[in-house]
Each structure stands twice: as C-alpha cells, then as structure tokens.
Image (cartoon, rainbow, N blue to C red; front, side, top):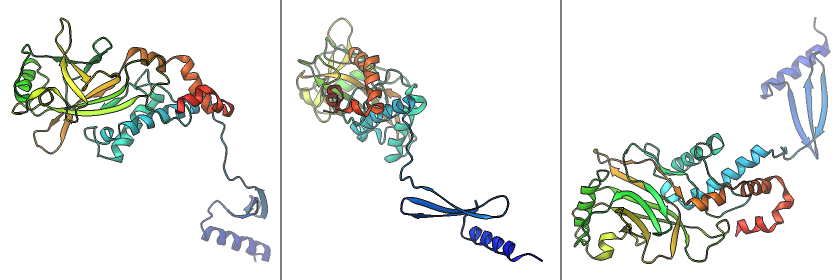
Length: 326
C-alpha cells in the first residue's frame, strides 16, 4: 500500500504535467526573484529561486559586430532602392518577400558572395555605394555597365551607338539601336539605378552625400516622340543617352540636363515581357562602383572603425563616428 507521502508526490507531478510543464517544474516571479519547484531524481520536491534577468546579455564578439555592420549597410541600401528591390527578382513574389530576398543574398556567408562590399557603423542611415545585385532573372547577353568614366562623366554601357547622328523621332533612334545591338528587342525596358554625388569639389568620399536616382527608358521602335528630350532622355528626365567621345562608339548614360553629378555606382536592369505577357523576364544586374570610391570604403582602416563602433561604446562620441551619421 502506497504511503501518503508518495501519493502526495505523485499527485503533484500529475498536476504539473496537466498544466503543461512537462519538464517537471513550475515558475513564478516575485519581485526580483523567480521561484520554481523541481522534482529531482529521488522523487522529492524542492523549491528554489534565482535572480530575475530581464535581458540576457551576450557579449558582442568581433564576428557578430562585423555582421551587424554588414546588415546595417544592407538595410540602408535596401531603403534607398526599395521601389526597385521589391519586385526585381524574377520568380520572387513582389513586396516584402523580394526585399527579404535581397537582404538574404547580400548578407549570406558574411557577405562574401559579393566581395568589396562596404560596412557601416552603428546607427548609420546614409546611402553609400555597394557592388550588390539589383535584379536576377533568365535574360542572358543583356545590357550591362562596362565602366564608370570619370572623363566622360557617365556610365558606359555595352551598347554600340548608331553611326547615324541625327534622328527625327525616338522610334527611328530605337530602330537603329536594335540594329546595332543584338541584346535589344522592341519593347525592352532599361531601368537605370544610380547613387550619384556632386561632381565638383568632392575630396572626401567617405563623408560626401550620395543621392539615389532611378529612371527608365523604353525601347519603342514605333514612338513618334521628337526633340532631344523625346528621343534621348529617360522617362522622368534624370538621364540622357548619348554617344561616348573618342574612337569607341559606346552608349553612355549621363545625368540630365547638366553634368552636376557623377555616378558613385550604377546598374542597369534589363526587363522584357515574357511571351505569355503575364510577367517580366529580367537580367542579372549588379551595381558597378567607381574604383576610387570603392577603395575608400573597403580600406582596412574604415572597416576597423565601423566594427569598433559596435564593440566600443566610448567610440560613439568620436568625430569620425559622428561624421558617418550626418
């Protein structure tokens, strides 16, 4: 016959199991302490307590600090180009899924899939140039950025400018573009994505302001638009398609109407309506960063300062850190 003590212990155990505490204990917080009962291996019940911790603090290691600096940079880039990144991945659902897709691919494997990316310090909200993808898809042999030409003040594309110099309509110009460039078809859409900065007087790439610019150019062989703006200028008048100076007749994309800005980084998303007409095919487009700017943001000193902002609270009052937040 079971003793009263054993029956009591078994009853307590059944109560604990019934209310969902399968591990054998129940907790209660009183003041700054947490009390709980625990059944040990000998079948006795003991009440113990420990100090309550509102937040479990984990020391920020260097790898975690570096990842946070990468994540901050990716979040800022995503915010700058959200209107593009939320739908530019062929096969991905539009909206938040596409934005999450971007964050996933640029931060995976500590960002090593896209070398020469730049970190940013704690709390930074600035836009900075990055060599990151802006679209993926099944289109091959498409429009790409060959280089950023400081001399010509623009982004050089892998397109040949037609031999003809004067065009009466946009349709005539697009017909010649298609003739000289097998990458293009009538109806193709070119989306120019840029971070630009004021061309004159910039000596400190790390502390200058970079401005996002996005505009589109539709290849329309039947367009009757005329004049400079109708033929060569993008939809919202942010860029102009022109002929590169010199012996090589490449197409170059410049800011419009003047030359007040230069490209810190530039990419071209090439889109084409699928034969079904239900979705767009896209190219694998990646931002190209101007060489000197990329060197500034990937220098070891800059990288170390970014990581230090996450590891050293006292560093958050330094002039360098405060300049990065402006």
